[in-house]
Structure formats: structure tokens, C-alpha cells
Length: 345
Ligand SMILES: Cc1cc2nc3c(=O)[nH]c(=O)nc-3n(C[C@H](O)[C@H](O)[C@H](O)COP(=O)(O)O)c2cc1C
Image (cartoon, rainbow, N blue to C red; front, top):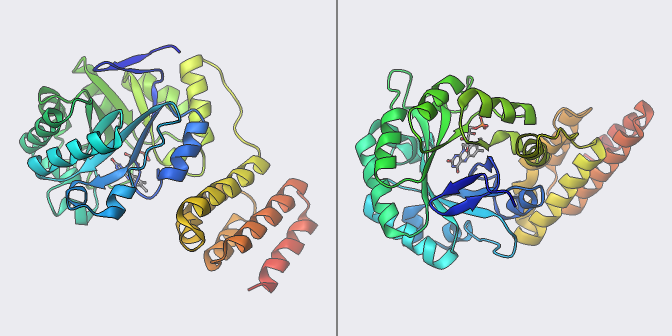
């Protein structure tokens, strides 16, 4: 194994990290991402309040499979340094992740209204205090994930980076957007480059990586030592493999065939059924399934149909028939398929 990065003693063999994503990087999808070569993964963001109140649903989000190799970080959010420290200690002791990450980028109103997530971009001092409290509470490396600032007239990222590094953060991920932008507009890679060049600490670039070539370009443009994939992996775990192959090994490899995309969607659905049970799996999987089939012929109609189904077996049948229609690639077959879909409504 070639070690390319060292995070306070934690050896990392890749420059491609996978982002924490609420509702996306759950336990079943994390297992798939690992199988596609994800070296560094994060849980969804976890409420520090929920953890210390003993909320089972919150804690279930952390489940870690220690049997599979690779680095796993748990991301926590909150605004109170002592609660964050307590939550961090609890996670470290009970779940034994490799690192802890602090969310300072979530733009959701219900998070920022409490002073957590991206609200911390307005208060670099508080960002530093939270980082210090968490770093003191655990022996693990602590990382921080931020945005460029609150809005275009308050670009505080450089100050937050200084404060959090000084407080003991081992690395900072910078998403090249402000809170005001949410996920719109283009991520500003030049702004990330400026921050990366101002420190010798590990800065991880994030925003708008959708292809392996984007991964390579972001590393080159920003000068970051590592980058983090996010929406690019929705319905596309192959991005992990193609990106790692290109930037870690210098090898271009092809993406998936249509057949593989649908097979993987079916496999993901099955894992969700096994993990969440029949009733919860389909509603939770709808968005994933629509991502797997995105831009394939007649995808919008298939997605609309899936959104009306509740029984896993019917969704599986629909996907299998769709796969057949796609791989045989005959317009006649499609017409028949769409007709059958209609008659089932
Ligand atoms: C559905 C969704 C859920 C997300 N959840 C989290 C989260 O839990 N924690 C976090 O730090 N960022 C979260 N993010 C932000 C991403 O990690 C990433 O910073 C952002 O999407 C920018 O990267 P991209 O342009 O490549 O998608 C989320 C983004 C999306 C779209």
C-alpha cells in the first residue's frame, strides 16, 4: 500500500475522499462505496445533541463495519463546544472511528438557526472553540468541513481555517461555495486554491467533481493534496474507482455499461431491504434509483413509475424489465415495456 497522506499519524493511501452526505452515505451505500475502492469515507452528519440525549435513531446512523478495510470518519454537528466534546468522546469510545469531522458547512435553515453548520462561518472564534473542545476530548485526528463563507460579502474561510488549525484540526475540507449559494452556481476552485496555498496543512478541495477528469483537474487547479467527491457519487459509485485509478495510479478506466448501472441499482435496493426492512427501503431508495438511471432512455417515465410503487418486488420487476429493454435496445421492446408500465397503473 502506498501512503500518500498522513493525518496526525493516520496513514492514508489515496487523494480521493468521499463526502459526508445526509440521506446518501448511509450504511448500505457506504458498503458499496468501499467495494468500489473508497479509502476515506464519512457517515452522514450526526447531531451532537441527539447523541448525548441517547437518541437511538441518531446513533444508528453511525454503524461502522470494522471488518472492511479503509478509513471512516464520523461527522458531528452542533454549536455548543461542551456538548460537541461530549458527543465526540461518546462516538470515539463506542464506535471507534478513525477520525472525527466537524460540520461547519450545512446550509439548512433548521441547522444554521441553532448556530451550527454554516452559521459557524459567521463566527470564526466559535469555530475555533468548538474545534479545540472536540480535539481535546478525543485522541483521534479531528477534521473540519467548511464553506467559503456565509455569503459573497462575508468570505471568512481563511479565518476559519486559521482558527480551526490553531485549535488542533488536522485538516480542513473547503467546499467552494457560500452558505447563501446552497448548492447552486459553480464551486469556486480558485478560492480553494488561495486557501490551500496559504498553509502547509492538509486542505481537501470539494465542489463540482462529477467525472474522474474533474478529480484530476481539481487537484491540479487548487493545489490541494486531496479532494472530496460528493454529488458526483450519487447513483455513480464508479466515480470512486475511475477517479482513484486516474489520480492515484495514472490510469484511465471506462465507466459502467447500462446493464451494470441497473444491476447495481438492484443490488443497492436489496441491501437497503436487508438493512432497513421491506417497508422503509423503497421510499428511502427512490432517489438513489432515479440517480442510477439518470439520462438513460425514458428515465423520467421509469422514475415516475417507481415513485408510485411501494412494494420492493414490483420495483425489482420494473428495473429488470427496464434493463432488458435497454440492453436489447430495440424501440419495439421499449414501446411494449412502456405499454406494460401504463397498464399496471
Ligand atoms: C443530499 C446532500 C447531503 C449532504 N449532506 C452533508 C452532510 O451530512 N455533511 C456535510 O458536511 N456536507 C453535506 N453535504 C455537502 C457535500 O458534502 C458537499 O460539500 C457538497 O455537495 C459540494 O460538493 P459537490 O458540488 O461535489 O456536490 C450534502 C450535500 C448533499 C447534496
